[in-house]
Image (tube, rainbow, N blue to C red):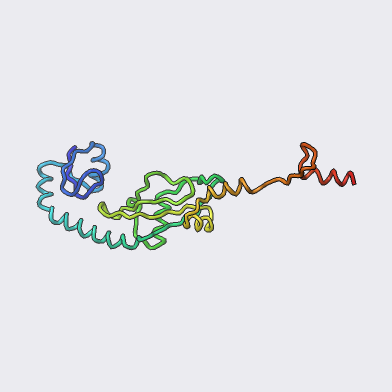
Length: 197
């Protein structure tokens, strides 16, 4: 299906471009969201008659988005979640969680503006794109941790999971007595000395 774009659509084209897309994409996404018109003669005339207004509206929205993007400079969101010992979250961080955290920080965003390429299912620091306008996008750092202390360590660049495993390996060492009988452990040996003494 050929459509006329009413706004810039990523990987498709700019305002006024006539592009060929799959019927389902046009019917289910572009047309209902007023991002495009069917490319027939009547719609081409309507678009050309309103082109200046459509481009002016787009320029105004882009200017507002650029002003809003200044508030996102070095924006970081910290989410505290329960996770397993290996760092896998019980559940995942959804777009709604990110929207709530950003709105709590005073940013104006909605669900459709958050671009989450894949679900966040482990603790760590992630870069998430927020498309404030088809031509203006910002990146927000999302710090997912099990505790505020862990979040602070991750913010400083420490890989919490790697450091935790290093601690585990060096955490417990058994006392070794060279005079002990083969197979005797450090706990058993003091009892044997008491029995002999």
